[in-house]
Length: 409
Image (cartoon, rainbow, N blue to C red; front, top):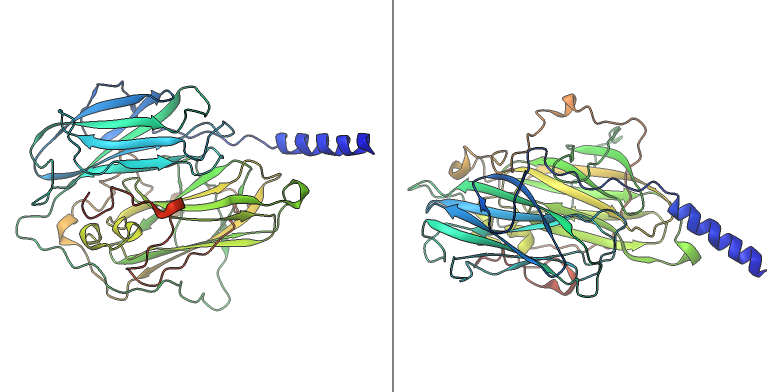
């Protein structure tokens, strides 16, 4: 009996280990390597490495008229050891060390290695700190790895600039009400399209409204790029098919994840659920995209919907899942109840210009990345609906405010 049980256990371990290792995060092809203390000369993408407990700093020269967003992507190789509190702490400071706003933490909140990202910003507005032109310091600190795995991790830095409000131009007001449920599907439904998610922001698969099929492998994160115009809401529903249950019919906490990032790589919102192998659904609904959300947004998730342009969906499957999971991703883009119309403030930017040097695909019809017969990654969902702007969704454990979206940041 013991020999049979041991043989079964070995077969199980080999089966899980025999799954193909997902590809690692693909950095931007035009990313420039930098070292701590270097000057980031302007908008673009940069790469550096960071050791356990290390602090890296970069000098940035800012004018007195532009809004600036400085992001960091931390993406360990799939399958490497991470801890719940592993991550980075980001801050923007004056040369003498005075903070320009609240620091912003990026954490894995789990033990599956996956790309995580966020930003800090300098906004030009009366009464805010760090408004003067001059040199500032972007600080990136490795945190939470005291008991975690040592070693150097690659960090991708993003530097994007956005014009401030035009003199005398009043941005349209933020929307005050919107639906939190996607519209009913059309009669008969639509045909599902095959898609293959990318490894990160730089090779995210371009998708639009409709249903897309893919598949997630154990430990894999897949990224999809969705264009969102001013006044539009994004509804993303990930439906995970029946799959192999974990060993011993146990459940994997937060084994399924659906996250959304805005065009400047700022975290918008996230949904998580147990992985049991049973069919599951994760639903994420955004506020309408509006420039005024940056000052009038009453939650982090609303404030993060401050851009028009390419938003990024990320689907992740726990590394301990025994087999790939088929998935269907339903995307709906709909105008808000009070459409804001074109935003005269940022008419020339339209956040293709806010992306960090990555060229957006002109149209889905030219997309060569479609792979026939690929099933969508599955995501299990614990729904956390929010029905009004004042109700904060649970985006992260403990609900700790994120500094870069708070009205004071």
